[in-house]
Image (cartoon, rainbow, N blue to C red; front, side):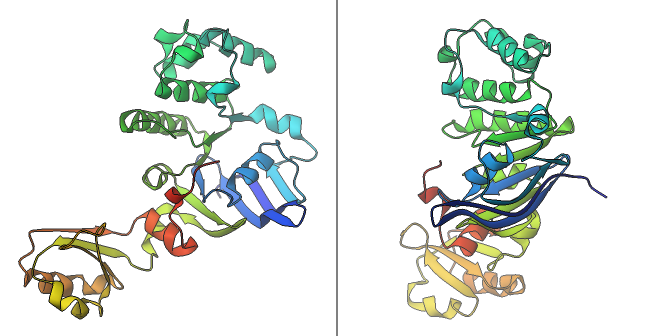
Length: 308
């Protein structure tokens, strides 16, 4: 049986009459990357801060590695690592000095160069945080979360604001942390990132978990499992004939560029034969994505909201 390292039961956090977290329950298992996604105000950040011991719940129960956070917070904090934003560091200390300082908080000795090497920053060990690029700052924030060799690592929007190359470099680092047997709790606004990195995902909306499952299972049960995009100039007068298969719309408002989302996988061959009659200039077939599932469940695109 897979070990539960985090257990959240009937968690509630209220501010006056507003429930930021509304009777939420879920488990996280050892060695997995668990993603918690939701728009701004959905409750994911509040939920994580309660698990991390940074906020007190109104009611409910949270256990981390078997410890009740209300009774054994000190023990919990020794076993978790939390990613900090770059603004949280001492700007008059160099990277290796910050690592040594943080290690002193846990009364342990660490090898700063060895830690920095894990994220490709060993050559920057004598630099100040302010002299790092955005991607380097994010990599250092992950180093800071690993100083106490935690069992569980919390990464809150670790790639926000990074260019595509820096983002993918961080994906490799996160995957390497997982391979060491660590459990990772990840929040992100990038659906592709969640789909690639996360073993399981919980989708939050209005303080509740509205869906939770292995990532591929969530996608498999999408309302529209297949998408067909195609370009043709001959279809405009016959749009209605495709309504029996699903929903047809223009792609980004472009004339002659269409996207058809199918209600059933079994209709794909029929649809392709119909489209072929119009001599498409271009055609691609793809499965539903995590973003499609998110929109179906919440009615919103997560990128419409700014992250917390």
